[in-house]
View (cartoon, rainbow, N blue to C red):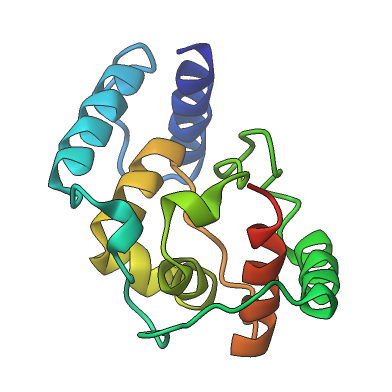
Length: 158
C-alpha cells in the first residue's frame, strides 16, 4: 500500500510538472483510484493467463530442452537491457520475473518483449500489468533471436 501511495504521489508530481491540464484528484485519492482501475482491468483479463499468446509477431513457439548457450546469451541481454526495471526475485519498476514462464506462455513473453506498445494497447493481461505498475514496458528494439534468448534465460528462473 505504501508503494502504491508513493507511486501515485510520484505520478501526480510528474503529471503536475508537465504543465497543461491540472490534476483534479489529490495525491491521497490517487492510490484508491489506481486500485480500482487495477481491479477493473484484472476482471477483464482472461481466466487462464498462461494460455494467452498476446499480440505480436510470435504466434506459435515449440520449446525443446533448455539450450545452455542460448541461456548465456539471454542472461547477457537481460543484464544489458532489462535490469533497470526488472529483477528476477523482486518487484522493481516492473514485476519480478521469477516463475514468469509458469505464469505466461512463451509466445506471450516474447510478444511482450518485442511488441510492448501493442500488448498494452490490446492484451488484457498486459493492460492489467500497466495499471498495476503504472509504467509501460520500454521497447528495447530487440530481435526475435534476442527475445528468444531472454525467454530461454527465464526458463531457468522458476
